[in-house]
Amino acid sequence: MRACRHGLSAVLLCVAAMTACTAAAELPTLEDAARQLDSDGGALLGSAGLRLSTESPADDDSCVPGQVRRYFRAESDLASASALLDRLQAMGYDKVVDDLDLRDGDQDVSVLRNPETRLTFELTVLSGDEPGVRVIGKTTCYTAD
Image (cartoon, rainbow, N blue to C red; front, side, top):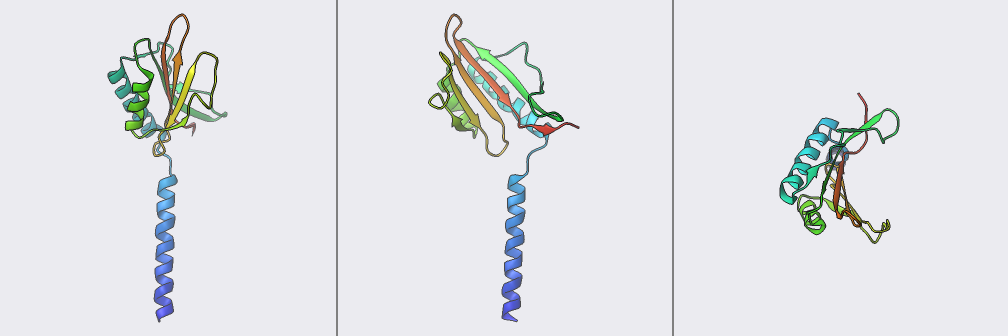
């Protein structure tokens, strides 16, 4: 009787753990991720004086064939890269790559990712004739419907 009760407890514990792991690993839908990307991008646009790039399509075909992702691109010659980094980190994004990891000539690059939504933002500080900041936000790749 005691072994049966402990066995039942162990089974329930395993089921609860598997359910928690499954829920944590589940991706949001493309529509939910796109909505969150628009919301987070909008928060950056409003707080940093960024403007959407005119060649910024909503869909991106850089994934493997049969998959799509959503993204947007914004730029500014007035925005502070450190302020954008701080804002993204306050919104739950973790820095996964910074300029020490990526050296691209005169450009400083940082990549931040939200572990829950799996959205990624890439910040590039542009120098040269037209200095500024470029921000690219992306969802992960999803199977095309």
